[in-house]
Image (cartoon, rainbow, N blue to C red; front, side, top):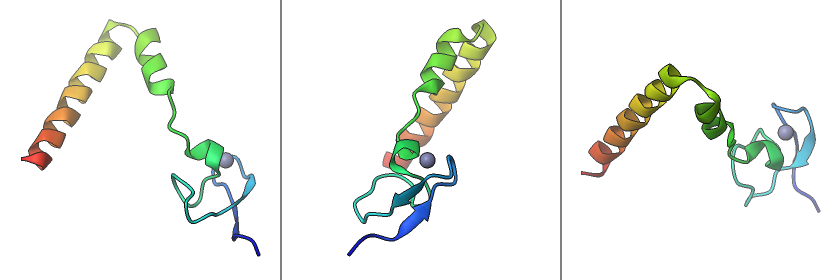
Length: 69
Ligand SMILES: [Zn+2]
């Protein structure tokens, strides 16, 4: 007995689609892990980029708050 074998849309690797697998059903476990490149990019980017990121983060935060209340 196994789980259905799926092909990852990111790395084309075959993986078992377990019911408790976190992340997307069409991505293998390693490709489902949250990417940390976003934070790294923010550090590498210039001032304009970090300002944009801050504005984006603020907008997302406002959206989240709006959803809660
Ligand atoms: Zn993958």
